[in-house]
Image (tube, rainbow, N blue to C red):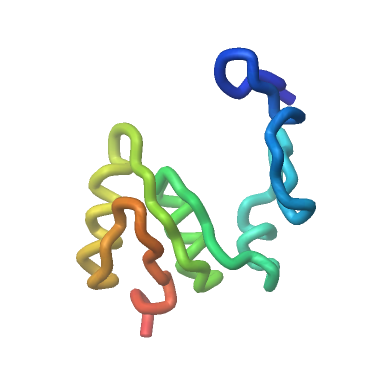
Length: 95
């Protein structure tokens, strides 16, 4: 696992709750399907949006490059919600 975060910080030096875990890779669909997941911070890749929507997980969308910006905008329009920094419920999109 990459140990550097920014500057001299490491993942191990971050103070987070016991319910937060940093891993190199995880099966995203399975994680999103878990009932304990309350929010999904996503870069708005299309598969991430599909998986969050399928599992009705609220999203905070932070698009960075390429199609991510358009994907986030489409979610915003479809869900009638704000994407930039606020939670967008996938449930609203498919009622």
